[in-house]
Image (cartoon, rainbow, N blue to C red; front, side, top):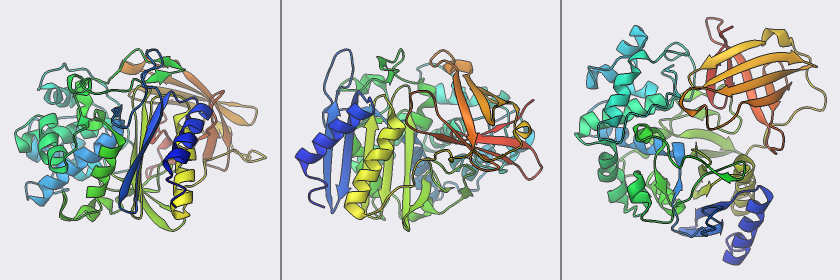
Amino acid sequence: MAEALDPRRRQARLAELIERYRVPGASVAVEHGGETHTFTAGVLNADTRAPVRPDSLFQIGSITKVYTATQLMLLVEKGRLTLDTRVIEVLPEFRVADPHTTEHVTIRHLLTHTSGLDGDLFLDTGRGDDCVAKYVEACADLAQIHPLGATHSYCNSGFVIAGRVVERLTGKVWDAALREQIIEPLGLTHTWTLPEDVLRFGAAVGHLDGKVAPVWHLMRSCGPAGLISARPRDVVAFARAHLTPGRLLRDPEAMREPQVKVPNPQHLGSHWGIGWILDEWDGHRVFGHGGNTIGQSARLWVVDDTIVCAVANGGHTAAFHQALAEELFGELLGVHPPADPAPPEEPAEVDLDRYAGMYERAGVRMTMTPADGALEARIEPTGALAGLEPPTRLRLIPVDESVFVGRRDGEPTWRAAVFYELADGSPYVHFGARATPKRA
């Protein structure tokens, strides 16, 4: 155990990992045995060559969602609402395209990604303190990708709406409420949301295909879904509060009760709780979350009493995080995360025509074409993020009747796609944590 966290050895191993996976820079914080250790390697910016330091800030992306969920749970514990409170009871002006969802969607639906709202509406509503309110107003035309509560599909939009609920109940903008409810009580000195605050520290920039990303940050309106920047040590302290009743919440375990099974658990976990992703590794309960922004990636894992937060600013981040988790938890606890998916030696014989066609939701269009015993998938970003990444082509190889795996040229990590049907027989593919309906 002592060897696993030896500073000289761990720094050297981190440097080896970022070189292997072409990561410009990374920072890792590990809490184990009551002590927190931080290790860094590489650079914050490939152009300036500024080094990563222990106090450098990285974008933690969607790990932010657990903070927003915690804000709401703090309000639940104060009796201001319940998880089954309907959104319109707090936001009477709230509307989405589907009248049934408008009337019946609850806080629980938002925090467990079961609302069915088309989740990747990235809409710039300005830099003002009313940006979240304006975003929620714009949701009046937001479509359903599945019926309310019918399945799990990762939903950024739902968490922005959840952030607006926080604003209404606290009387503060989301950023200010976050500081009052979580950041200041935990003494998180290196956790910020606005660029003008982040820039007071050494801040990482994202990298795409080895080059500095053309955009540093997402729009402010997406704050409750993914705009926190932090050093890993602060993220570990936040996770520690979820292991300590009374540190923030009287009953933090309530957020770790399984709420919905994930149709495609690869790279994520088997279930979703309130904000948290839940899994089991070698018989050990695991909770955590991940986050990806424009060329940056973060992971947070809690296994037993050990907490790890790792952040990286480009390269093959999925493979980097997998290798790091395998090594750290293997050495510290003798626990191993599930192996990445991989194609079988012989592809399964599957009726590929059954899955052929076009699948679409806000932000992405996927076209599946049978070819030589597999599906050729063309994945095209649409909407506000369309210009940031080119279309991707994947050869999806069947593992069994519903599970396929594919990877981009040059990438070490295979990604799983799961084809399935809802209770009403509607065909979907669950890929990248999202449920995408077949449109044609």
